Image 1 (cartoon, protein in one colour):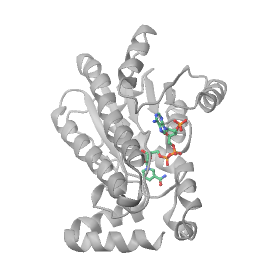
Image 2: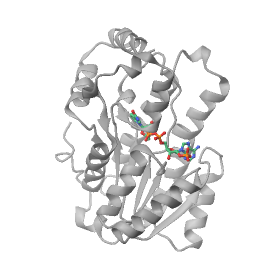
Image 3: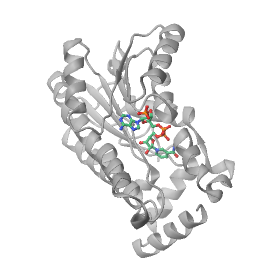
Image 4: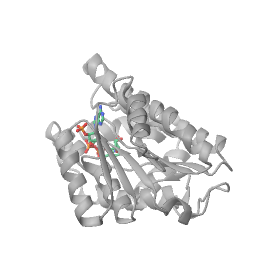
Amino acid sequence: MSTTARRRPGAAPRREARAAGTALVTGASSGIGEALARRFAQLGFDLVLVARGVERLQALAQALRTEQGVRVHVHACDLSVPDAPRALAAALRRARCRVDVLVNNAGVVGWGEFARQTAEQHRAVVELNVGATTQMLAQFLPPMLRRGAGRVLNVASVAAFQPLPRLAAYAASKAYLLALSEALAEELRGSGVTVTTLCPGITATPMLRGAQRGSRGLQRLPPIVIGEADAVAAEGVAACLDGALVCIPGTLNQAAVLAARATPRVLLRRLGSAIVRRFE
Ligand SMILES: NC(=O)c1ccc[n+]([C@@H]2O[C@H](COP(=O)([O-])OP(=O)(O)OC[C@H]3O[C@@H](n4cnc5c(N)ncnc54)[C@H](OP(=O)(O)O)[C@@H]3O)[C@@H](O)[C@H]2O)c1
C-alpha cells in the first residue's frame, strides 16, 4: 500500500502542514513514538511530548532542543486516566500552544490466551489503546476543524486487519482504531484536516523486547520480519503530512495485509492462531 499515492482529495498541500507547526506525540519516550518525535523535529516541528515517565521525556526534549533547535514542551501523564486527555488539552490552551499535528501513538499489548490474562491487563489495553485515543481525538479535532487545517496520525498495527487469537484484545483495539480513523478521514474530507492510520508490523522497540523476554518463539524471530522504528517513523510522518489514508511500512507487511484481505475469515483465524502460537 503506497504511502505517497494516497493523498486525500481534501488535503491541504504539504507545505502548509510543515510551516512552523507543533506536533503532539503520545508515547514519545521510547520506541516508535520517540522515533516519530525525532522525525518531526528533523522537519522543523516544535513538539509536545507525552508519556508517563517524565525523566525520559525531559532527556529527549533536551536532546531535540540542542540537536534540532526546536521548542519542546513536556507533559507527563497517564493517558488511560479518564480525565487525562481533557486536562492535557486544557494545559496546552493555558500555555497558548496550538497543536497542528496530533500523533496518537501510546499503546500497550496484552500477549497470551485471553482467559489467562488478568482483568487489569485487559483494562490497560482498552483504556489506553481505545479510550485514551478516542478522547484525544475528541479534544484536539474540533480546534483543528475550526482552523480548517490539521493532521492526525493514529498508530494502529498490521494486527488491525484480522482477528488474532492470543493477541485478541490488542488486535481488536487496533481494529477499532483503524475503523475509527478511516471513518473520520471520510467525515473530514475537504475540511483541511486529515487522518492517517499507521500500521506497523513487528518493530524493534521496548514493547517487542518485553514480549520477547517471556517467549522463546519471539526470541527466534528472523531479523527480516523485524522493522526498525526509525524507518517506520519516516514512512509514517511522510504519509501523515501527505494526508494519506493508511500507511503500512515495509513490503513484507504490505504483502501480509494483502494476503489477509484475500483470505476467507475462517482460514485467517486458524492461520493467525497457528502463527502466534509459534511465538509462545
Ligand atoms: N513494537 C511493535 O512491534 C509494534 C507493532 C505494531 C504497532 N505498534 C504500536 O506502536 C505504538 C508504540 O509502540 P512501541 O512498540 O513503540 O512501544 P513502547 O516502546 O513500549 O512505547 C510505548 C510508549 O507509550 C507510553 N505509554 C505507555 N502507557 C502509557 C499511558 N498509560 N499513558 C501515557 N503514555 C503511555 C510509554 O511511556 P511510559 O511507559 O513512560 O508511559 C512509551 O513512551 C503502540 O501503539 C503499539 O501498539 C508496535
